[in-house]
Length: 274
Length: 242
Image (cartoon, rainbow over all chains, first blue to last red; front, top):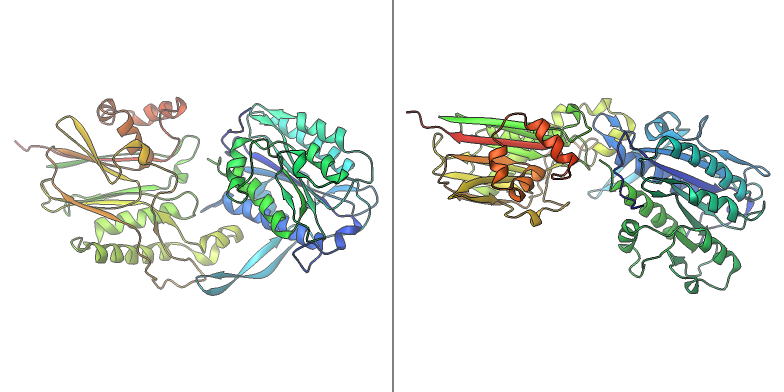
């Protein structure tokens, strides 16, 4: 259980993103003029781009990773794959699942350069919060994937939400997920609670005492995995006070925290690519 | 007479087309080069090859180091830029290729083509020049295994399209050495091979002259004696004609 398996085309890694699409995601996220739904969709689309970028070589995209995206709350009690016509796909397959290309600009060397930004799914903020259903779907996908990839780096599941589940207590589904393991370690489940307020977020806490008096915060802290040492080392670059035992959890995440969390997950696992 | 022995191998589990190191030499000009394209960037193998081939083929003067490096990068960039079919790149390759390519480089010029009494060495990064004197291993620019890390100095190709092929100079951090060597042989090697030679000297110096190096190093990788990386070795030997 060392979280050190090389990531290769024979032993790919797996990311699954869970995205809350409930009605309240239409409210603005702290630190942005845009809604939580828009920022979450943009952040995950950007992170998929980042993973693809790391897997891209001169001849094209190499399948160092597989990816799944589950959206929950777009319809009542609904948790569905947001990748068009598929569940978990090799990362190169995302090239064929792009729903649109947006013209964006990036500043390079003092010059504005146009580039095509691929989008795989659009922001949605519609119904209730069937998080238990989403976690159960993630559990099924993960268990099936792990059976075929026992030598791989353990899957990383990142849940982005702004509220409590409306379909029951997620503890049982989460515990089932966290018990799934490859030879290299247990599945990592991270939670990111998106905030509307400008209250200071709590990022990667290692102790319940670091949390505010909030029943929801304690629940999500309990449900989040302890980070392996290699991930703590990467997270330390952004969060100086992070310590051993830190959980993959951000409470009251503003836009910047959401992006950092996604980036830390990607960088930590990408460093093992061979 | 000078003879050259080259060995290269892509990292274990990779294909020959995935190999991103490069080497080149020209016996008449007395020039030898090795480069290690950075795997974080793309078209790095092409960039490494451009640097090596430019060094051995272009007859660039090496006596003024700053001017030499400037011209080496300028000509290599032109070659690198021309060889990439920018208009035909797929979306993700295009989005990444704009950032350019990176590579280490080490080049050796024998001032007198048939002797090693004056060698001029220019280096960027952790590819090494190694030789043995009096039973002791010497190396440049790194001298011991602990000096290798994951962030060596690199030469940058400059931006890719939509930037034009126009050259924008950003000087890399380089080291140079002008020296003679007492023995009849020197070696150029990329980082993993250089580190392994240092760690396992003197046995390693015997091994690199043996046959079937590919099988040997595959086993070393499996035993974790050497990092799983592209491996490149150029061994240059002066043989007495009599």
